[in-house]
Length: 81
Image (cartoon, rainbow, N blue to C red; front, side, top):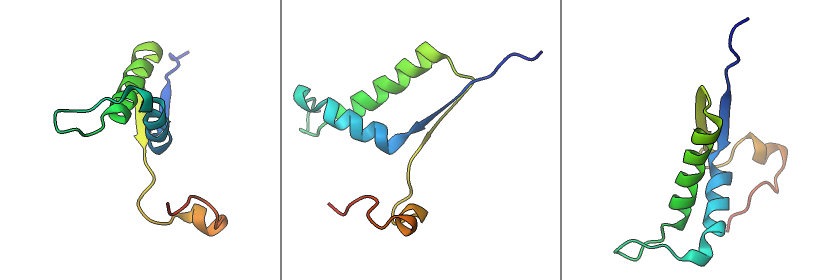
């Protein structure tokens, strides 16, 4: 029997959204004053998953810009701000 392989798939937009709001209280900025909390949270989550799960394959997927098939199936999907 072959060794079982693992694949980790990450919803990039969901993780970025979660990271942004999770890191709001810490107010991490660079020398130009740009917010870095979401980037830090996103990256540390990916590193933690890689370290803990040690998957054979790993992918992060993002929705393309503009409407998708989801908008056709459910017009209320997403929002415009």
